[in-house]
Image (cartoon, rainbow, N blue to C red; front, top):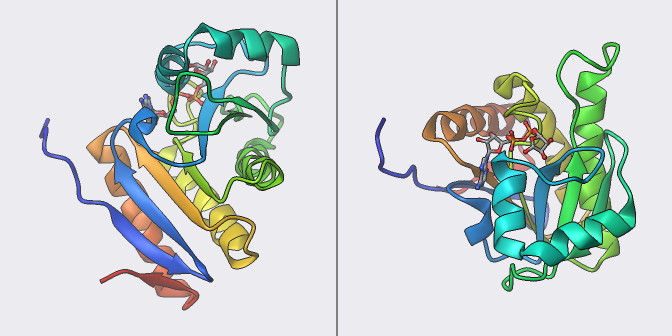
Length: 194
Ligand code: APR
């Protein structure tokens, strides 16, 4: 397992940018940090565990006050101990295979709602983890295609300005990098940075 990090891969899309990063999302300096939550907003392991650890116990208290979030939706809280951010956006992705064939629609929706909520909160920069690609079991190659199309459309619409997609493992980064190159090959609105 190489411990060297992959170099970020960026693309200009509309007036904005999308950058794929390999690393820990809690290190990203953006206004909105998305976590892959469960519908009960109970916190958990994976990226949700990392975000809650970094933000501190107030995050879980704020989640308790919200009471929950349906699959495919997203809600915002303050970022508390994640001092470089203004908001944490709790996105609930689908548990793969448990949604009567609506997995893809719900994964797209979790990304779309995260972008809408970020924009409503006045956040122009946002970082995503690979929602549903961990314990929720979504096949990552297909998830990458779905996520990048939703993000492309939000950037073209000027909904946000800077999107960073943060992949924890190198293998995950490589899958997303290939999906971004494929997207750049099929639509000239996605311009890979040289
Ligand atoms: N930074 C960025 N990405 C991370 C980090 C991190 N610190 N830690 C893990 N990941 C990546 C995983 O490698 C995976 O690609 O986040 C992606 C999503 O995996 P999970 O965190 O397991 O999220 P998900 O598959 O959506 O399952 C959500 O897990 O943690 C619980 O409370 C959460 O019940 C919810 C479920």
